Amino acid sequence: MNQVILSHRKVEELGISYTAIYDSGVINRRKDKSTPEKSSLWDYANLYFQPRNPMMYRVMSEKNLDKKDIAVIGIKPGVLNLTGGFITDGNAANESIKIYPVQEGLEVLKQQWHIIQNDWWNELDGSKRKIMSECFLPEKIAPEFIHSIFVTNHYEVFTA
Image (cartoon, rainbow, N blue to C red):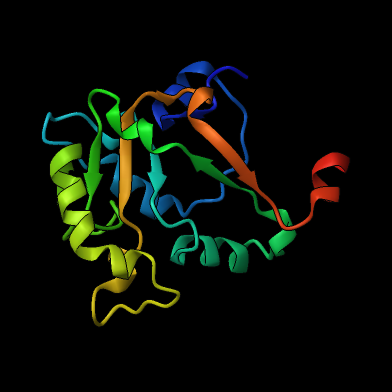
């Protein structure tokens, strides 16, 4: 596949078959959100800055997945230089998030980087929302921006 990470809209347009792991209520809230340029978040490929986050643990729990069933894709920081991207200060499904152009968003992330890199989170102090800060890039993220794929068991990769 030459278009590795696609926006939800692009996946639909291309008729790509996939197994949904997300909560449809959460995804609909995200679909209804707009960037400062009035585009739907549905038109953007999205990345978390911290893959070990509440969404991952929820998916693992609800779908009864084991660590060996999960792969995390490492993306090169240069992806932030692409035109038209945005950064959120938390999970995009949350009502109180703010969406920033990349450079402004990076400044916000510097302020909360200690939260994003934390091992634990909770709702009371806002860390659950902040640890899920995201980057949104128009339509797709090309394969040349992938630098690694993390798995817990290399044997599983070669037998899948």
